[in-house]
Amino acid sequence: MKLLTAEWVAKADADFATMERECRATENLNYDGICFHAQQCAEKYLKARLCEAEIGFGKIHDLVALLEQVVDLELEWEAFREDLAYLSDFAVSFRYPGESTDQKSALDAQRRCCRFRTAARKALGLEI
Image (tube, rainbow, N blue to C red; front, side):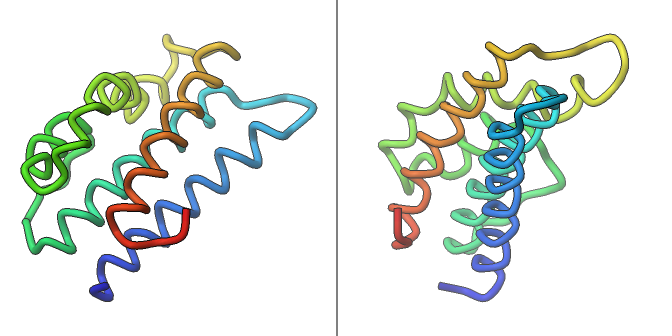
């Protein structure tokens, strides 16, 4: 694995750990934070796979656009298109006033993130 790919994976796993830790909280859960870190985890795994394949990408947070760049390498990732589209919404809009998530959305984001993370780690030859 390329050094830069490993850095993307480390950052993705840091977001995953933050999401999981917040999901285990018993008071004052930050549902927006759970959704944001779920999106960030998926984004960074997509970028890790692109990096490993030496495919360039810009400063982009649109998970479906990133999927379009990598799907020829990972055909089975097409099955995650709906999940990635769902998570993509949490990159920006829910970080500002006027939009908030709830427990149901947060748990859904966590589930979708976990499913994609498993596939991404498998594709990168990492422990699941």
